[in-house]
Length: 255
Image 1: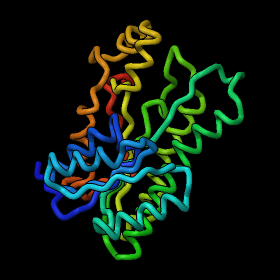
Image 2: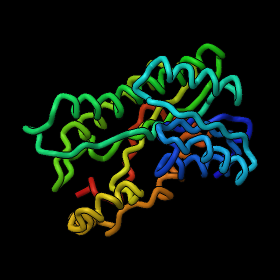
Image 3: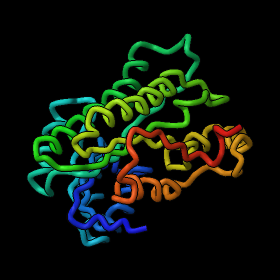
Image 4: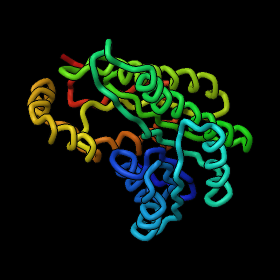
């Protein structure tokens, strides 16, 4: 599979660590220039390291994706320094678990704002840049298998709802922009063993057994397990694929 991305610019929200950073490394290895957007103070240093390791141009900006004006400004800076982005991965997201009867208004709004509204603002800015410059592009929005099923034993109504909405947002934008050559798909991972997930398991080790017992492949995904799908979806190999929700969960949702 030819996934040469030389000459393109890829934006990764939540790109400072975890899934976002792992995918950013894969896209950089394919030759894409990389823009990392994240709340982490280390995002600029992380981008500098990417540039040195892969010989591509890389830019890191601290960003709250729920701020529409700041998001638009960030994309303007990327366009000026690296070129108009033609690849987008929205990996910024949060989860706040708890019994639904105890969920506060602030917690509910925070999850919806980051996962759904932040994803929309980022994709909106991405699409606006492409349309204004008559360019084609591909966006991959990270949803979750939690938008299709209800995870157990933890309760996460806000997270599940937000991720179901992200998948439908991808379909909506895909249809709206299809005639202009802009593709939008969503990727719905199952349980992924990131640093943040490991912290949860360290606090509640019984969760690991509960989760893996329900995964036919018998293990959680590694962030690297997701890179092949993203590389495919942002390349010309998938030029006729848009508006799709693709699950990558080790078989979890098949049973």
